[in-house]
Length: 397
Image (cartoon, rainbow, N blue to C red; front, side, top):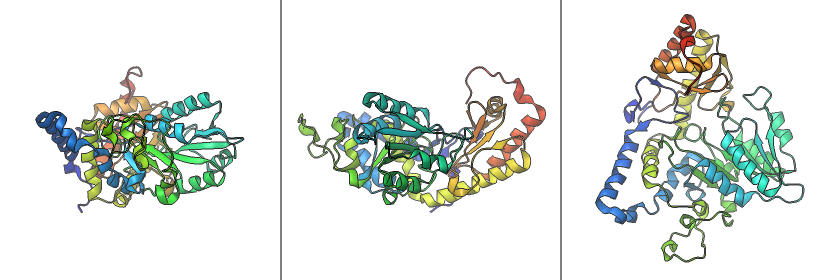
């Protein structure tokens, strides 16, 4: 086991890269995996499917270790939005009073869009847990929202704006005790925090793989279906979810694959899947618990620097470890212009409207010197006011 960071394992963008919670950088392992699959395509043409067939399933053990699941409970496939639609189609079953869908005001919009579409189809409501400050959620409000009228609750493991981590085990237990099926969007936690989805009794989950997993832009995401639900036949079916032993018999009758693999739909994008294949190799070198420990060290160090040097910025990420994800969110009324100015000076942050800077020091490649540089540039901008020269119109990262 090598000690973190593995800066030599990545082809990092020039400067200080603090936006890996939006798009992780390219690793040499991911590049090599894609190049290998491209060579197979070149040399073997369609014959390369002899190796490509079942590639997604071969990634399941590594993914399972990241989310605390058995290999047959996870599969790399599709996007969060597609996977959420597939899970809702199968597992949202309105009955009597227990009819409605639950999310939060702070969910990533695609989740709410998907939930709203199924609510309209089935004549139910999407109820949103309110946020008192626009950035975080209170336990009392989650507790009040999980009523006996909720059939399917879909919650974020980590809130994408503020970086607040929710207690997955607790809210899974509470929801299920009250009769709801509980699912989770793990986009902002997989690859950054340990999980124990099987042990916690999580019903279903989905995630993307281009953030902390560094699988590449648009890389296939993944989903989790607990073993107790493996007798369910997917309501949305496609030929890649067919039993692998008989898939190429081309029978019109659907015979579902075992476990989560049954929720696959169309043919997987092999070159994109290869990026994830290579990226996962780094997690095989380093336990996720080690990654999490280093992440907490880095976010601690960044928060301490902000407290000491940048009093103009307001921390909205919780300080407590159990409530903190992998990135740090900071408020400032001129955050949009600060984001643009930082990028021009070689520090790559993320901006969320109207006034939030997100900085993600990632265990695999962020150094203490990177944090020093980022804070120094921010201090210089605030002192000089140079960021105010940036236009407010146009794209903002």
